[in-house]
Length: 195
Image (cartoon, rainbow, N blue to C red; front, side, top):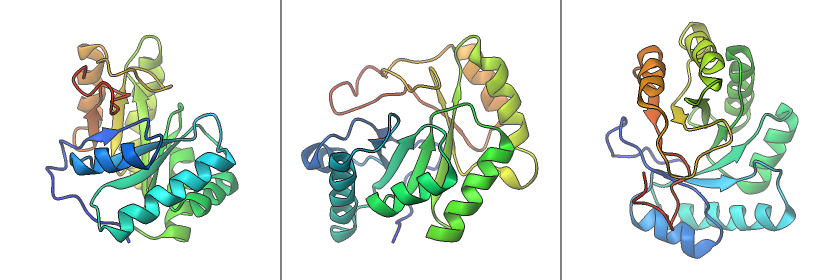
């Protein structure tokens, strides 16, 4: 069961590079809303088992921290399989994604895993990605494809704990004012003060 965070919904913290139970415990202990579990390059057997253990431990201790799988675009069947194997509560999609693709993924995930399952697109505020990000962001604000949350990062690939160009962040936020969270990207247990 997913727990809703009690934090301000416009100031959420996601900690990435959760590489073991100790880093998951640390991130949860400091109040991270989301724990980023990397599967951008695919999901190995070892990662799958670790992520399943992390998700189970968070549930046992009733932690409000939600484990989310960081992925690139994949076939929906693959994403469903990965979620079933890891027991995560959401996906963060590190790729340029259209509103139509987003809606299809969100619909499939919520049909399978429930209405509270999160699907979070990442919008790149870097040049020249900003043009495609602006187009995708404006499409997602219209119709049924509205994003649960959106992360504005320094690139599609994820960040290093560094901020993106302020003007680009502001432009994206003007399109997704209620959803977009500027993210230094790549905040992890080793670099929390860089963001």
